[in-house]
Image (cartoon, rainbow, N blue to C red; front, top):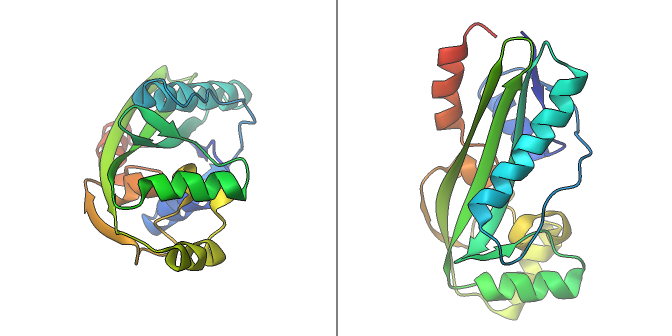
Length: 187
C-alpha cells in the first residue's frame, strides 16, 4: 500500500524522509478552518481529517497521511500571519511565553477501511527577544508561511525549552506515528 502525504509542507516530508518512510506528496487543496478563538485541538483535527478525506477520494487504495499544526497561547490560535506587520505582532506576543503546538493527524485508506485520527500537544518556551533578534530570525525564515510566525526546524536559537515531541512541533509526531504504522504493516 502506497503512503501519500497530503501536505505541501517541506518539514513534514523531510521528517518522513529522515525516518526512512517513503511517501508521495499530494496537496489536498482544501480550505482549512481557521478561527483565532476556537479550540486549537478541534481545529487541527478537523483540518487534518478534511485533507485526508479529499486526497483519499482520489487515491482510495493508498494510505493517506494528513496533518495540521497550530500554535496556541491558551485558547488563542495563531495561524499563518497575513502580512509582516501581523507576523511581528503575532511573534511578539509569543516571545517570553510558553505556548502549545498542536498537530492533528489523520490516516485514511478507503479500500482497507482505515480511518485513524489523533492530536498531539507539545509546549514551546521562547526566549525573551529584542526587536533586532526578531528581525534576525525573520531574515532567516519567512514568517508568512508559518503558524505563529516561526519554524523550529530552520533555527532554534530563540527557543528556551521544549516539552514533548520535537517532530510534533515541526509538523508530525513521528513517535506516535511509528507506533500506529507498526500496527498497520505492511503498507
